Amino acid sequence: ALNILENPNLENFSFPSLTHIGADSEKYRYISIRDNPALTTLNGFPNLEYLRDTFSLRDNPSLSDCDAICRMLDRGIEPWRFKMSGNDFPCNSIADIEEHICDTLTTIFTPEKEAAAFILAYPNPTTSDFQLSIPKMQLPAEMHIYDPTGKRIRRERVTSLRQHFQIAGLPPGIYYIHFPGLNAFGKLIKTP
Image 1 (cartoon, rainbow, N blue to C red):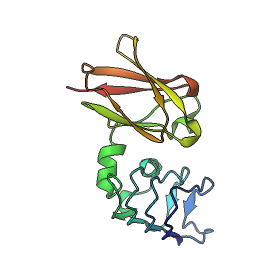
Image 2: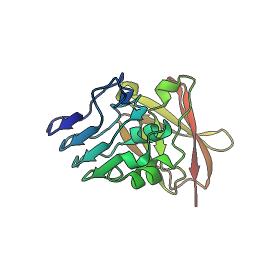
Image 3: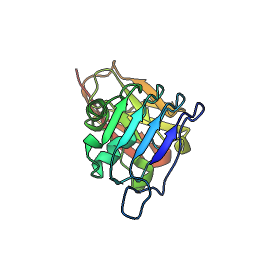
Image 4: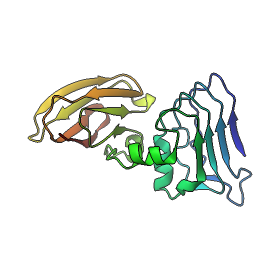
C-alpha cells in the first residue's frame, strides 16, 4: 500500500513519476490518503494511469481540489475503485466529482498540453460565477475574458490556486478565456 496518513501539516504532495499502482512489478496495490486535515489538493498524481485495487480518500476535511481524479478517470481507472468520505465538497464522493468537475467543460487549451492539463474552469456552463483552478507554478497569471464578438470585456489577475470569478452581470452566451502569459485559452458558457 501507498499510505499518506495522519499528517497534520501536509497541504499537498507530488509523485510525478508514479504511473502504476499494483502492476506486477510494483510493490504498491492500493492508495490510502486519510486523516490529513491540511490537505487541500490531489494534484500530486498527474500521471497515474493504472490502479490495481482501490484509491481510498477519507477524512481529509480541507480537501476540495480533486480535479486529478477526473484525469485518472479519463485514463481508464474505473470509478468504483475510489472510496471516499469525510472530505470537503466535491471530493466526498465519486458522483460529486463526476457531476461537478468531470462532467463540466473544464478544459483550458494550449499548445503546451502538460501546462494546460492542470488549468480548470468550472462549473461550465454557469449562471453566475465560476472557479478557476491553476497550478502554483503558473501564478501569478493574467486572465482575459472575451465576449462572443471577440471584444475583451474583463481583465483579471489570478493570484491563488483556486479563485472565484463573478459573471452574473454578463448576458447569456459563449465567452472566451485567455491567459496571455501561458498561451492558454478556453470557452466559458454563461446560461440564463
